[in-house]
Image (tube, rainbow, N blue to C red; front, side, top):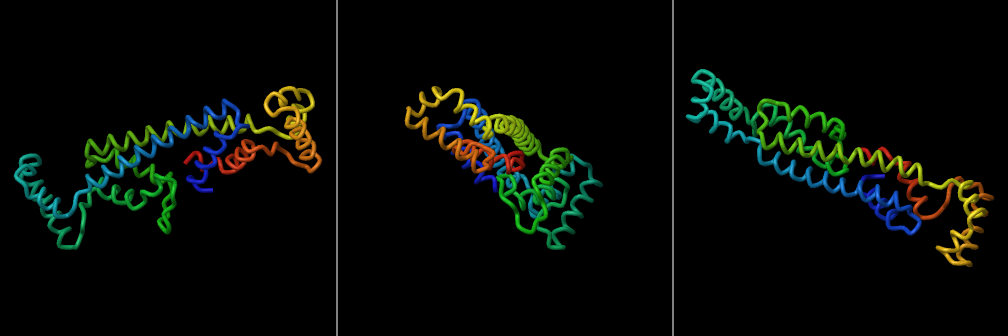
Amino acid sequence: MNKRTLIEKLQTMAASPSCYPDLKQVTHAYLKLVEAEIIAAKNLVAELNEDIVTIDELVEISHSKETGEKFGAEAAKKFAANADALKVAGAKYCNCLACTLALEILDNQELFFGETVSGSGMDKRTLIEKLDALRTSPSCYPDLKQSVKNYLVALAAKQVAAKNLIAELEEDVVDIDTLIEHVSSDIEHFIKFFGVEGAKLFAENAYKLKAAGAKYCNCLACTIALEILDNKDVLLT
């Protein structure tokens, strides 16, 4: 199951009449933080695109008066020689650590949004490691550092919400014995929600499930919850 399908299933589960209020609440909290992470990722991608230095920009910067004043004549001379050599060699971008990492991250930006990057060999965990390395590199611009930090904070908040959601899913999925116990001991509860005939059909369904060897309630909320739990690793990415 990919991330997009999982989100759709969570939305369907939360909207189903058989979804417990606490499960609705933690699901909505998780979905809200997923959206916050997506916004932070889009802002980060925009900042990455803005801050990568092209080779022509690098040559211009390296030969500027400001660079000489900032680093001194000798260091500026070496900087300019490196930039010129890169351009002659056909490089398209600056080869500093920040630009190199930024280009790798942009080449795999689909990972931010739950997609896979065919043939890249990079997963979300590696992408996060590269973001950490980018954030701490001396050549990373302050605005880019902040965008990376914002994204990592949003991601961490979402992962906490995901763990809470997994715990609530595990607690709320109704096993078949619990379902039988409920319909046997508290039929009035089901009459209140489904009416007399509906409650009768619900109880009959529960006994049929038990006889058929089912392990869990087959209501929409429980069915989707089980699917999500089978793919809980996707929640944490």
